[in-house]
Length: 130
Image (tube, rainbow, N blue to C red; front, side, top):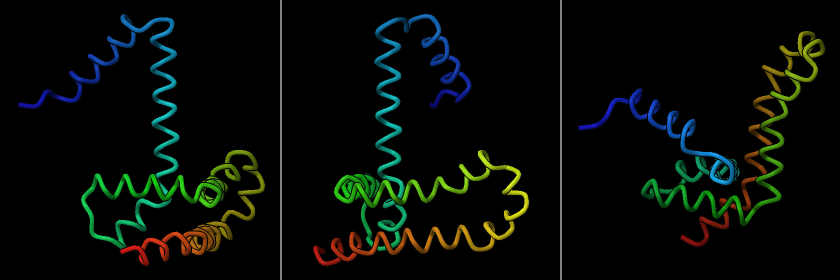
């Protein structure tokens, strides 16, 4: 039987509080940073792969990561374009109040369109291989 999530979360929190110190804490932070970077590389290609190909979850995640690494400049550009609305909202809140409605109606769709165009070579390459 599964343990409740609160018990597991509390156990992990206590483990972090009492056991990890010094080098172990640095190692854990480095590991979580590596997982975050791998997730960010995987994310732009994950949903297009799910929609185009029928694979198991593990294979889909692995292939999305490999696509993200293989097409790294495009991946970084897609991540930067996706972060643009958040940066605009937090860094320029006064400007966003005046032109935010334009961004909501056209900005998100425009970013999705540009990202899909950036992803076309990768998807056509993968379709040709199957």
